[in-house]
Image (cartoon, rainbow, N blue to C red):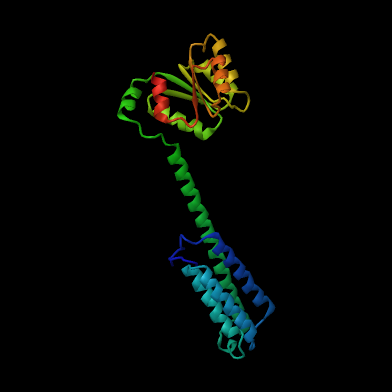
Length: 271
């Protein structure tokens, strides 16, 4: 393996290029044994096998793969010589067939090990991705001042209307850990229904929503006697002057442009 370090399992530096090369070399070895039955001197076939085995040992630095490839190389020296098979006890099989079976078993072990390495690597990537996703979703550390302020916010109901589920979850965690009661909706209609149920004190609403937009949601909340007194805050990537004007006209009290610093958001909520 290029620049790798040998391991009892497999090297973490191994990449998919190494695995692809290993699979190609496996295919090349299989072709040799399909084309040449063995049982007699065949220096050309043996040379091909030895070159392919050397390339496989260089491509995949893994103990189990090396053992399998060395087995292929050793048995091939016997298979492609006149008197090599004669010393092999094949039981019910002929000596040549016994050698071919052993070679096939070694190649099968090599191919299976390549598959195991790839599966383990994919699993590791999935675990690392999940850990990164969880770290990104964790709420940031808050200053002592904001933690104290958050403890006073128990009972304040906040509705988050945001179609990006990762962003919505990050907001939910931040607000929950800051002492707020939080509900999340992913569309405008869900947001309106949730607002009727929970009677939020504050609504954090995105402008771009899959079924409507934040302007429509804000206007509907202002028209409903049950939700008209909620504090409406736009949290959106729409930051042009025209967007701010439309937000004010729709009934938003505040317009925050993404990405919003968590401490800024919490201070705005507390002001």
